[in-house]
Length: 271
Ligand code: DGL
Image (cartoon, rainbow, N blue to C red):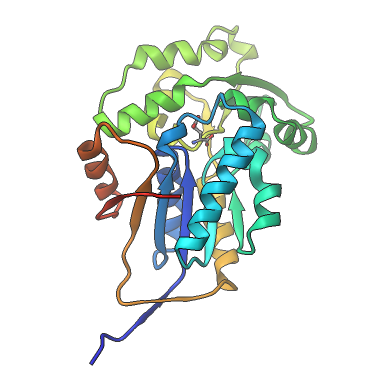
């Protein structure tokens, strides 16, 4: 007799690196029963300084390939840099519910008392029309200080895989905020890259009293709504799987890291 099947909602989380795991954590805490497939594009990490057209094609190629290889209920593009540029094309090509992650400008504008908010994100996200529109639509009463940096994602990536982190590197990155006179500093800073929650403790130390806002919880709620009407997948047993592109020079560290998030295996993704 074959094993009885279990019905699950299987969600693909996509990012350039470890950032998607911060989103997965937030989504899982609200949707504990979902099965996660986590795909990170190590081959092209970081996304933060890549051209728009390159990212549109790259993200489309990988996610389309994933939809052909796996039966999925929904997709979370767990990356601000990819979501702010690639969502329209993806939604045209893929007929599954897709949830994107974009900077939490709206909640930050509501939380801010002094109406000065900071946006810390990759140069790609900072420069996008999508981000300008978010600011225009939801934070027109605020002064928004934008800090685009391609290195902070690398620092977070390194911390999660090796445990090493250099506070002085991060202190330099947030200098555009800390070097301002006290009354001109933001009281709220948006973490506009999914890698940054992994260095949040250090940012809190460097920006004392500043509220740090990310999109994790909002994405968790959005996924809950979206998967209600998405298809069930029948499986023998629920098993989270993780996949990478390119070559990983620190495979064992990476494996240990994904294990901590509940992914037993780390597999090569052939697209
Ligand atoms: N985690 C990604 C984001 O949310 C980008 C990191 C990178 O590849 O530069 O923007």
